[in-house]
Length: 560
Image (tube, rainbow, N blue to C red):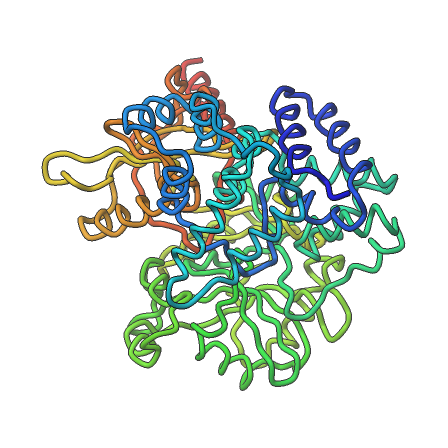
């Protein structure tokens, strides 16, 4: 008998009720034991709010407006009822559950219960609907699912659409649960997930075949690997000290990070979000085919927009190119781009992820051929490192990356093996809502609600608001984008699915009783929007708290 979707809803209710990671892991492992073998993959993905795995380039193609229209169509009510219910709710799923409870809504008597395979099939159908009338057909699929849902099931249907479960369970907890349920080492599950980018398939392999199947998961050409992530250091001196002396410094190029797969004459270019950018960057494909010194490898680099004299253009100029497949000839003239490489992940059929960084770089110097490498310096000398940082910023780049020479490449993990040092303190934060502007900004959503991620629970935690930075043209564009992501609103604010990342510069982090994380940003301003960066990779509330503690300690030392 297929697994009822109610089981997923009940599981997430229980997960929300505990803050203990150990208890969450136990509940998930218990759930996994009960899932039929054929339904492990969809059950895992739907339980963590990811109807589609990370490495899957497809999307549900459902906007916030479409979800809202489906809710109104299936559960009609007066506008004041919607306003009251959704204003009080923490997210659209909770609001939908409350609305249905208030209306006494639910599936028709005698209707068969929703099952995990049916819900998963419905979401997959959404990805494939295209062409004339596609918007209405997608809306009908949503309506059909909601009409058969109980209030608790509807909550988690909506949360899967917006990809925000708020249960405290992220990939890390699910990895531990899979390992516990299958009786295999967590490190083996983690490694397989990093390479496959599909936690559902990894769970299936672990639960059905154990360590043997997990060990067989390997680097696969044209299936993108999660990028290794960096932490922040305040200064070059701090970074060199953390790396233990001798280390590599590379220019932190102000562009889009890309992963390039080449096998013979086939080339694919993937973004850090694992999206396929190949069609929008034909000159990079040409550069790889004509200049790369290997015909069978996976390398990593940075694509930047370049102006006169090869000087880098602002990141926002590059964003005009990424994913753009129309008017390419004109765009190539207006926004020329170039590639620099900084890592090698595979050579032929040999994966390089577990090799030390120094060895990977040495291999890269041979694999790169005529494709340039990111400017680099190996040193333990502070003055040389600071001079190199100055050279990078003088050339128009963001700063430097400081890398430990013996570090393996750890996909998807953020550690101290790689540190980024910027010329200004910034944080990448998720936009979770916005306020309507006034005066010159009347009619625009212009005061953005900014949130960091709690690395312990995975939840987004609001840390501030700002309307500073964007131009009028950007405010107009962002208003349209945010309204398409709307989940609910109050009189003066619109709350949105967290899909847009902003890089925010700020003066300092201060204690705050206003924001739930206990800290807020002072004098914040948006530098740019990071459409190349997924919300899962925004900076953490723990990072901001550490900044506050550091500044408080510095202030105290000056008073001594």
